[in-house]
Image (tube, rainbow over all chains, first blue to last red; front, side, top):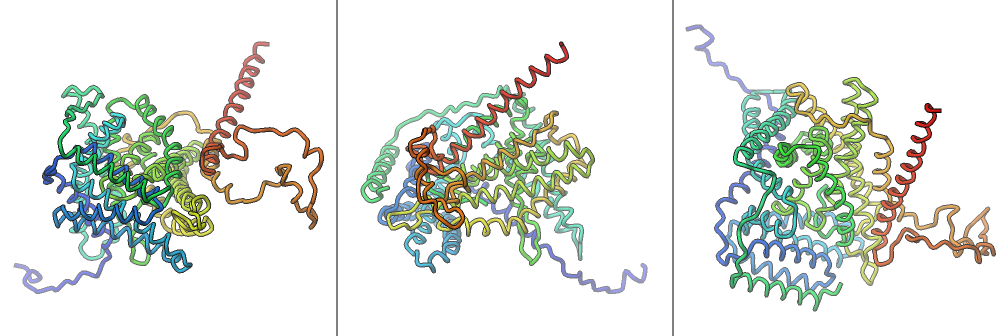
Length: 264
Length: 334
């Protein structure tokens, strides 16, 4: 056995900056975990039609934006809190953390405006941002995404758009997995100081593009083999349930509240 | 650059939606004719690519990180129309499913990122590339295109923010939406974009493009053969800038109305009277008087007038050039 193999040689790699790789890995992981948690969703106990939910959320967002009444916004907030309180704890944390972060950011931006004495508007805008985000996040956390996309079909969004939307959601997770592995290997192989990391970052994104092109070709071939002609139809039938009716009643209640307090 | 809901008024969002509808329609039909059905999955996967591209952090001086938008990059790789749809879909998923960027302001976000950043960036790239035919010229085109594309998108965002307090106030005169005027919003948006974000965008675009060109050159979008006339880029820029006209509270010099001319200051003195010829003269009632349309908010009328004005100019130019062609064809015959 050669001498140098027996000898103990301590190696302490010089500190290296790889914060940006960690951040990229984290942000992709966050997206992937959100996509994966989708498949675990239980269908709503009350099984409200997704189209109704989407329409109601859009309406709520519009009314919130139009309203100048503090009371109306508080009423909506209370309603949203009730809905939130009926969800699972894990979901509530996710929804609130995303929404509060953005609301606090908005408040920070509006802070100079508060100093100038315009407190009322600043509070209104912050509250509106918070309520809108909670409403949208409740929709996204309580409904399966493919039912949201098929609900859009009912609103007359063109087929091509919905097909593209579905493909995108599926491939965000596939391409995300793929690029995550590349980022891991870049991190593992950068022992000590590696000044080529920045160039590798472009390599990873470039490879991701080429890979996406290959995936698209494979996907088209597979679609054509299965008889895809460019048309995309929705098959599930609309069935009214008790829950749907209750949901419509809720919509009417919100509109009435808007007309009562939230004069434009 | 993702505008959340409630920063812009619903009517601004509607105007932006009205501006984006024709863009989307043209983009969908262009993609349908330009690309075969085989390209359809590519748009979806291109959208997934653009979504993930925004997740890639790049180190910045000072220990922070930033990310690119990739508007111009996608337009160069997929073609501007496909890129427009891909980025729109990305923004839609971000807004509806990830709560990033608003639902009402979705159209405004699409206008800034899917339309301005990708189309303007691509046109600048193509314009420079077609004239300087070397590889260096191409890279110069990419750098200038992505830098200007992103900064114009940021400028459009700043203008959308900045016109809110001018147009939408409550009874007490307090702003209902984004409270900062253009004098605040433009520097606040433009300084970081001009200094940092634009540079990142340009560097990232060049780096990824050169990598793809080296590894797999045939995957890049070929583009149309004919040269792009510089006037189109100028037109897009001018339309984006029209709301700025609202800033100038006075009337353009030499364009005074009969009721305004008496206040005109000339040589330190007010004119103080209305010339009789103007008072009783011919008054032309334009269809869009003072660039505002009844029943529409001022800004909507302004944009509408801008689009109409550009369309009319283009029609006139096309008519003139069609005469010109006819004449030039006749000359060799005689």
